[in-house]
Length: 70
Image (cartoon, rainbow, N blue to C red):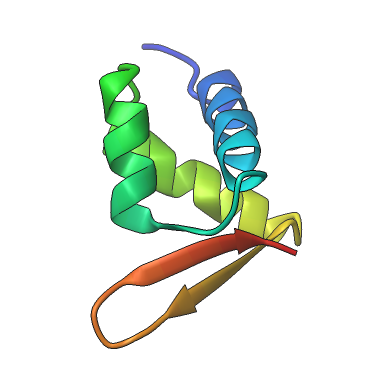
């Protein structure tokens, strides 16, 4: 069984760097990282990590989730 803590942290770092270029929707983040071999479940866990660390805003409008840096 693989220890996922490191993978989640690595993914959080990738997401943080993506967001330095501006806000992204959850689906945009998943699409970008899927091309690099990242699993969408890990992406969501990493977003949770960043939110818990108070690094990002996670916003919901009528149709999508929007993630941006604080």
